[in-house]
Amino acid sequence: MTAAVEFQNVTRHFGNVRAVDGVNLAIAEGEFFAMLGPSGSGKTTCLRLISGFEQPSGGAISIFGQDVSNVPPNKRNVNTVFQDYALFPHMTVRDNVAYGLMVKGIGKAERLAKAEEMLGLVKLPGYGDRKPGQLSGGQRQRVALARALVNEPRVLLLDEPLGALDLKLREAMQDELKALQKRLGITFVFVTHDQHEALSMADRLAVFSDGKIAQIGTPEDVYARPQSRFVADFVGSSNVLPPGLTRALGGPAKWASLRPEAVRLSAEGQGRGRVTAIRYLGAGSRVVLDIGGTEVAALVPAGQPLPGEGAEAAIAFDPTALHVMEA
Amino acid sequence: MRDAPAILPDRGLADRISAALWRHPKAFLGLLLALPLLWLGVVYLGSLAALLLQSFYSIDEFSGVVKEEFTLKTYAELFRAQNLDIIVRTLLMSALVTLACAVIAFPIAYFAARYAKGRWKALFYLGVMLPLWSSYLVKVYAWKLILAKEGIVTWAAEGAGMGFFLDAVLALPGVGGNSLSTSPMGTFIVFVYIWLPYMILPMQASLERVPGSMLEAAADLGASGGQTFRTVILPLALPGVIAGSIFTFSLTLGDYIIPQIIGTSARFIGLAVYQLQGTAGNIPLAAAFAVVPIIIMLIYLTIAKRMGAFDAL
Image (cartoon, rainbow over all chains, first blue to last red; front, side, top):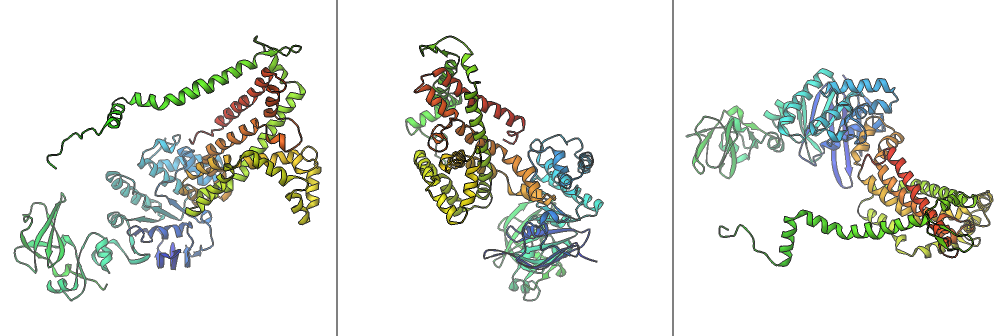
């Protein structure tokens, strides 16, 4: 099967900066794909390479098997939901949504009907006459989504789509986006720096670091079996153990990751240390121990006894939870 | 830290004044507006009212004395063929100058707003503002030399083998003449040059406020460059274009120096006002002439507002 989006050794330089550095990537049709990484890691540049706002310095990009290296943005059957939504302030919501059809020369009655239908899809029926300035952040986001979907793109790109929304709204939109993607069957590629968002929404994700893909895989894969210290640290605040400590805890002399939720506190155990911080999280508490100079966090479920700050404690865990990494 | 007072001590008169203004925000606003209101309201609007009043007087044709009686006779005089000629000529020139300025200014303003950064931006501002630092008269006389029959334009055109083209332009009825510096074409060129910065700057300011993502969104949705320009850039930049055109249009409407120095000696409104209030001593007609640009600008702004030019403000 041809990939919806394929990167072959793609690089993008800005002067001396290698924003994207030899990326290979294949996004399958109908997939919900996340590009995760800290700011400046190259994830947004990759998205812009797909939409055509950036051109690769090297390598090849194809969309559904067709090389798009020389295709301008307006000729790519790909649409974007922008981070700042980029709604046209001088047009009504309806005209914003119908814009893609208007520039294609589709008749007024047809395009306005289609726009109304799209507004219904994003649960904003009857908002067509308003101006973007009269909408809340969440509503603007929906309009941006409707405007991008009206063209029936083969790939929808979302640039930090939920970044500007508050927590409650963000969670509701995550569910809705996921449901919408399932229903439409369009390939969604979204960029985020929020690991929870990427893990909860994506079918597969790529973790970016310094313009390269550090790891690519399903959320379970990336979360449970990080291939590098960077991934372990970035995706879900894991404990990263140096080789010495790994060996002391019964593993090989290599870097390893250990999830806080896999760590229990006990009177006797493999590692002893002093409690340096306790943070209450609601469903549990995060207890940080200093074990031989390395901070190791344990997630203690609510209801279990907590040690006091400065007290001595030991950690215990199932040996299979210790994940050894190559880098 | 525990011993620090909750209220910090006054440091002097300035602190007490700023505290008093903080407690009385309306007094602060009044203070801010007092001087501009005095200037605008009394001096500026007052003299405008006096001008308006003068235009309703008339002049006694035999004695040349101003009759201080309300009449529309002076306004009726504006519609005499020779006066109407002046108004139409000025209006046409202003419209053409504004159009040319808008067309020339757009790429410059667009470059400055979209692409120029750091050093290039400084160069842009310098390039646009530099001509404003030198005297207006010096620039106009410089242009007279540039456009003269023995000037650099003729010389360059002949050197490039384009002399016939220049001759053809000068032979055009209505716009041509003996040389560029004595033709309406020359007046037009100098007007465009002199007022161009006033079009570039507001245009650039309004283009600056159009986020780049908006243009990307248009392209993303399938718009071609031309469509993006018509449907997104132009509507969003329109307040700047209108602001610029108010400058170029009204400055051309009122100018009385350029048409005196460059071009045929055909009169423009500004020149007519100048001559009527000076040598002719016909203050009422001069006032009536001066009211014409005001009315034209009001009509222009009304049309611009109807077209939605200020919706994006």
